[in-house]
Image (tube, rainbow, N blue to C red; front, side):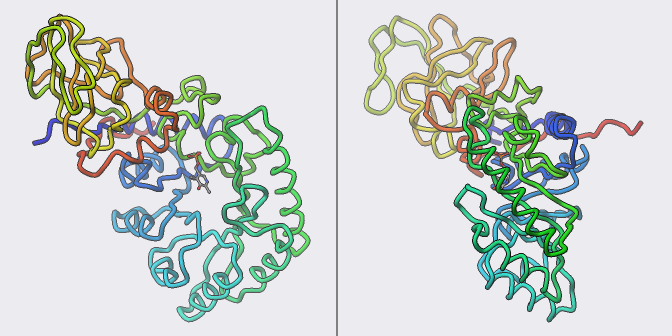
Length: 375
Ligand SMILES: *Cc1c(COP(=O)(O)O)cnc(C)c1O
């Protein structure tokens, strides 16, 4: 019933996966953690696989299990170790874990042996991100432990870049040099795994030396920019997500009439105010108060006053809006477009935070769902 929806264009997702694969010249692991950054992990995951991705990446065992329950059979990389208590569920869901701590590795090996299974793992080196990963002084010990594990196969070696979206900085070069030393240490122990990978979206687009034989884009799959310096549109990527609603109430007000909580805004002239049933409980940031715009009647119009939990108001000036008129908060209407990047700039944050905060109260609808006919 709700007229406010997140609309996800799966044709854009497929286009973006193909574009990233062509740019990198490698296989793709499409990162669909956090419900595909708010876009819907099952639908986006299927579309990414249709477009040729060979892996999906998730942050949590639960996220991987959701993909399996939906019937997705492709390899799924679990990007961080869960607590040891999560190993059973990880094995049940046939996830490929990224490993970096000796106790986790030992527990995983024992659990796999108990089941009579052999489990592929990817070993993660910390080369400067400083979040999770084996620190350099422990590289050899952990690689030796992994190589010697009875029921584990080291099928991948990886790292993660901290500053790939800031091309002017030296950090990425230093990290990639560190990664080469990690790879050499592994080769020294006789490990020659199939998958070597380091690149997130910014690494994929800007750092050829990070590409190796698999890239791990997340934000680029959604057609969004990792940072202002790396514009997704300039790299041929298409935004997949729109946030669309409808006018639920319209009224004419006199100049000086204040609206919404706190009376922080008043009509500059006589004119029309529209009410739109979407608010901060849907993930439209309350901090857009005083900055935000929507598209209504084919033009940009300012949000009038405070964004409330379930509704916001729009100043339409001379345009008389009608109940049911389409209101675009993100996406296109006519020749105009509002981008997640616009919100990020106003709010001093990044695109990732904004789409992943669109709440489950917003129904997701999918368009462009049919893969192009074979041949
Ligand atoms: C989230 C994540 C990615 C994807 O990063 P983007 O910047 O969204 O492309 C890749 N690798 C790891 C380890 C991640 O945590």
